[in-house]
Length: 104
Image (cartoon, rainbow, N blue to C red):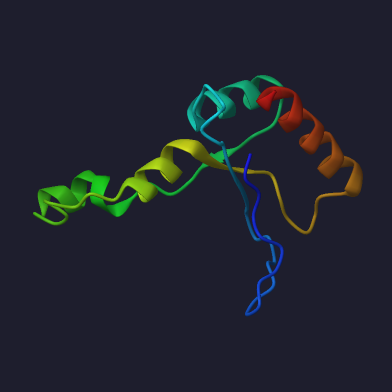
C-alpha cells in the first residue's frame, strides 16, 4: 500500500483523514478491500470520486473529452481508514493489524 506523506518541505500532515492507496500488485480494488475490512469490523470510506466521472457534471456537458487516469485510478484503488483525535493507541494498532492482514 501507499501511505500518506507525514511531512513535506512546505507542510505537515494532520491526518484529518488517513488515506491509503492499493498498489498495482494487489489483485483487488478499494471496494473489495473495504468489504473485507467491514467484515472484520473496520469501517472505511472510499476516496472522493473524480469530477470527470460524476454524472451531474457529465449531464452539464463538462469534462466531455477529459482523460484523467490518475484521478480514476485513485478513486478505484484508494480508501480512508478510521482516524481522528479520539482514537486510542490500541485502536490504531488494531486497525493497522487488520489492514495488514486483509491486504496480504
